[in-house]
Image (spheres, helix red, strand yellow):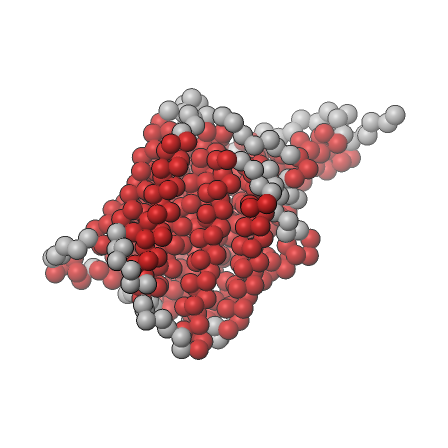
Length: 438
């Protein structure tokens, strides 16, 4: 497989992505506390204040936090260009983004005004999107990844603009005539645009690289991406009353096609040894197909039984959880098990190159995060999915969902800190080793 040349000088400081990775479990615990405190109210409607707060904590504080952190790492590797957000600018971006998520959740719960999250998120995410677009247009390379990552960032920018328009309704009473259709577009662009486009962009490279599978052909890559972008454009037109109501159906078709192709690639991997990350991919894609099936059923203009209509509100909440918990968190958790050891190994190799005389064995992937720890993390994720479905069928069990969610992310945090500790030990040995003298 042809890869963009890896430039060791472009690799960001280890603290750049790790600060985002280590922030995500904190937000997951915050979300778990809200779920435990409000219990069954979570399932009443997706418009409930607690449901909106939990949704945005997980979407921004957990998912986007890890996705943004991963972009700091994958941009130099896949596109040959490092994100030029460093030093005090990185501290400011991370701090303002974290504060924006916290204040947004607090505003949904009625604890403060929406003005502060409006300003913080507009500043932090706006700055990030503008920086990435400029970088991808002017410096980035890599035919397979540059365009889809650029499309994902454009979708994130559109998602931000729509979110700010919706927040302006809370602040100044500005509600566009399209009403809830704009909220649906906000959710759709977040799911099919920002998340799906970025997952596709990264998976086209990392699945063949990490799992030794056949490459994704150019024809399939372009077909899936083109179909998805067309669907998003047409769905956006529908939100403004243009007669293009089949946009979401194109998005569903593109996503389903991506699932089939990716599962087929994974089935042909050359390394047939058991791999927890493969299990994450397979389960995540299965849940993605389930979510697409539920959305398709909800969009079709068919008459539904009265009993099913009583579940309509809960079904909307369930759709978000199946997509978020069942697909996005699966891919994120699996990729962390690959990206973090890969990232640490790159930095240790760079230190070794600076002092070739340091004959110190570097930790391998499974010394950084052992197979046993990977399995415990995956089993905790399976328990999370089981608790989710139990809560859907028996809402009284929702506090159990909160507990399992917290335990799942505490397991992830434990694995992250364990890998970082191993890195620090190896780094200190390399730095204290005798240097070559002339």
